[in-house]
Image (cartoon, rainbow, N blue to C red):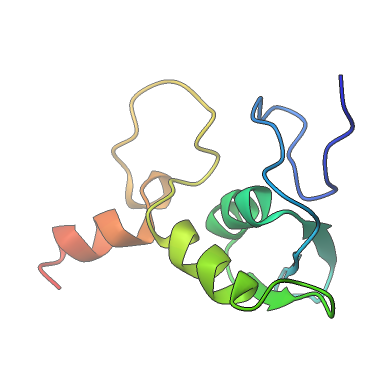
Length: 99
């Protein structure tokens, strides 16, 4: 198996998409570099996280990652019913609130 970026969760079966492009930081400032795909999945899964483009990232990498994360459910690779607000994407929670 090809190595994956540091932002890829061990239980997430998806491959990296593209080169390392972003750093996702948690609320305490700890972070992981990742491809845009895994960066978005990590950003969606960590409360209070933020994303920054790496110095050599393609233009718009952080915005694309942030935008993609909006529609991704936290830990989206887990099976089972997902009905609690903490299990839904930010976009799903906004829709439930009528915003």
